[in-house]
Length: 353
Image (tube, rainbow, N blue to C red; front, top):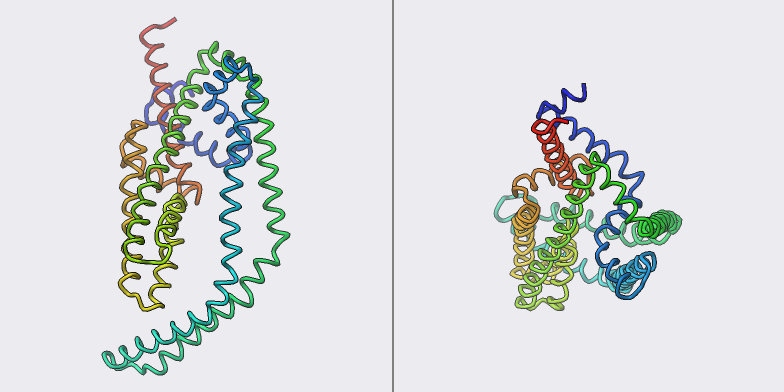
């Protein structure tokens, strides 16, 4: 039965698709720390080998050093972002009254314009909008912010979950680094494991390409946003632009976290041209990402850009937020497994034992 499926190309593709979907949907969430540790040790294997030969540093110690460096950088970035948000909250709260008055003036003018051009009761429309606006401000001040502070238990659970993940990842990376050479030699000695190794190599190549592509796109968008916002004369425009470039890595929202509130703020202040620039810049950033990401990833991995784009869309539909990585990753796994099995089948056909 399995042999007939393997001989049928369509059946083989369907079988591999089902296996990869099951792996990403069921197996990966249960074994994610160990899988990430395996990929980590494989990627940094050459560097660890150099440290071992030149510095006489055991691989386990090298893994710990790499993880400590990465962890320090990550904690520093998170701490800077968290400190900025917490430090800005009082200013945001105190500026709400000023923004409310400015918004009321803008709404008043807009409603008068609507009344003159469309004949709608402007006073009633203004009162309705202001009522909804006041409800939103009251919710933000009285419920949303206190709710964030009162949910400390949920935050503690989240940090405990992340901590457990990181501890498992650390232990797995150290153990795999210790037995990595023996593990790989055992796989290389077994011909049927070559498919697995080629899939692993394909995954590593994709992840390295993905990270490099994200860095390039974030740099381009960060420089573009910083230049545009700086030239427009927006206060701290260069810093806002660089922050937008960093946050662009987040799916769906990305630069919108910075540019949309910044545009609304400029609108409230009466700088309509700057608000329009923020909106156009946001659209341009979305267009740049959609244009560059499939091309940069597809060209390096050897996959057509349209295939990467479709796999990202399918991944988001199937796996949600993480589908932007899981979709192309699943496609690469199917592709590598199919090519390896086809090569093995042709070899057995041409050189039967």
